Image (cartoon, rainbow, N blue to C red; front, side, top):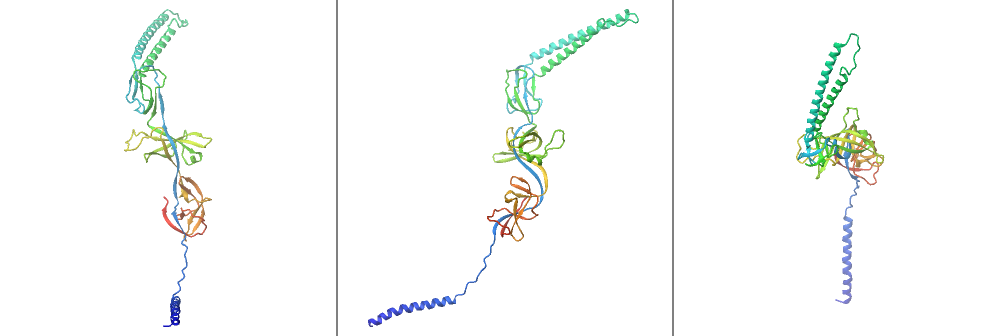
Length: 396
């Protein structure tokens, strides 16, 4: 083969391959069907919604307070002497029933005083009998010797002043005996009411003086919790006033111990009648019966309501009728809520909030039963915005 023929084939073959490839590609492009056009839908923002319903709601006022004794007394002997007996339970934390013996003072001196007082009374009664006899004799003698029409003699003649003095001496001697017997009884110091010992400083052999406080006891029948509250919160509560028979609002005293909570029931009994000028806080007193479970059976694990304990308190006030309880997070700027309408679009609705309770708001107007409110925060929310609601249930 000649050189010219060889060059011709080297040029012709690549051109033929390229031409064939181009024709095939063109045929494939022309035979392809055009893709169908689809309209893109906008599903809307995914939000959590909550169905609301109108109901009667009892107002709850939340507070905290410190447990204190409802009754407290200092134990002060009325007589002096050496202590000869102290009850084993007469220590800090010990319990006593009303009338139980706390400690006893030596009685020897007071028994002798009773004996002396009885002797003095007997002597005074003897003197009274003698003077009374003399008075009777003097009256008879005067009546026998006196003429008709003669005026009454001097009272001294008839022993009248002497008789009155003798009667007064008997009365004084009897009072002295009663005082001596009373002092003797006072050597035995007893619990003034059902109580628990808070502090004491008495020991056997110790000399105690009359009028000196040797112990402090606190009543166990009830305990009190002093709860500071904003002044405006008291408008929802029943606070008894002196001279009225109306009961105060019920309350729940909540004790937290070791991650567990225990509830004790109580009731408002009074207000302390003072308002803090700085914080505008007033203080109400909640009474709780049997704080140490002395009268009823104590359930396993339940703590006592100890003095000084810090507790949470829920006060139950008046009942608001026909309100919508909604989560606090559902309230938007300008006292509005976001409502999902029947077409799953956003409806920005103004509402009337009558009360705020921690994480719950009470709404009076602006909502209807069964409507769904939006709990999720949406950036750039606008009236009529399409939403994808996800039901969370109905608020109880």
